[in-house]
Length: 502
Image 1 (spheres, rainbow, N blue to C red):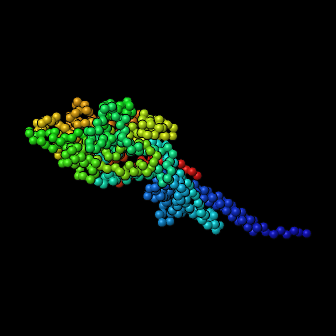
Image 2 (image 1 turned 90 degrees about the vertical axis):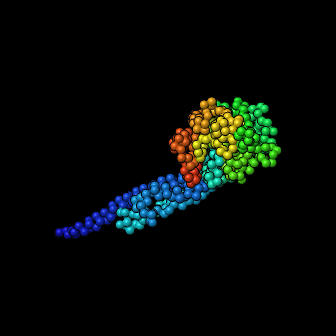
């Protein structure tokens, strides 16, 4: 009896085909799952980077645009229309949600095309990622030292006000509650600094003056405005407190009937009288008068006094909004820089009105920062329309020789900067040298310095402030108003310390 067996080759072929399909499916699944994972990882990294920018720049009009630009760059977009990028995945533009006043969430979606799985009829798969970042301002005591000399008049002072306010808004954010451990001082300066008027308490700080130096009748019918004379070197390069180095009140005495050409009285550079209506004091109306024409005992003294460290955003913005260009005297940046140091130095703790401020140097998780802004070279201004001026010794009698405006260092002819300082050029060189020493002393104390030059063409001045900054990246040369605003914004964002919250 014979046994018949069928041909099994067809069955084996079917099994092999089914096995191969399963194998291809498994391989395809592995490959496409890996692609999904890689795209999701890349998308997450792009969102993480973008949301940090969005949080850091919260409040700025360009925040979301800047974050989106970084997102696309990190995702590797190659087609602007479709959003195609990494591994041919196509992403939609990221979306932003403001969680609270200091937190922003960024989400992104992409479609990942299948490769081997597509042969099995599996279509493209979506991926979704999101991240949140909270703007956390690390503790900082910040002094804004701002040039409000006469050359800042007009649109420039407006630009300074908006730029400085932008920085304050970036740091404080939109929450009504101030961030923890954030304090800001505002230090306007010209050829003098107004340290003596306490705008918070509404009184003069006469206790900072040397006994017997303030004579109220010298300012009649007005009053001392609060500006002080420069300290004698080397104390104009230190942070000594008033009890160790008392101040002398600033007083620009009247030049009325002081200068003569032969027997003829000639106009002085600050002719004022407490009683003569023809020579009344007009310094309080300086902003409404033509350049350099105000007169009075407080001439060139900034109307805006120093605002000490405050966590009151509104108070800082109010001081900034009230800044007005102040004419006469020139620009003595070392005085503004030193005053900024006064507001941050623990040597001055309690003197500004807050018992625990300023904090010690190198307090954990705290930084002390000065942002120093100037629109020109150091200069000692000589008003050409009134004596003494830089005339020859025989032009007026009496005349001490080459001279210039009264400043916190007195008259140029008084040589308070040193016996060798005889001309305006000499004075500029000497003040530059004192600035350099002051910058060194401040940085040694542990204070970070940012510097901004605005419309400064002098390479010597640019080098002075570049060297003053704590590092090259902390120096900003701003030739235009737009560049000035950008400098303040960049500094503000650099001072914001961010962290991912999820």
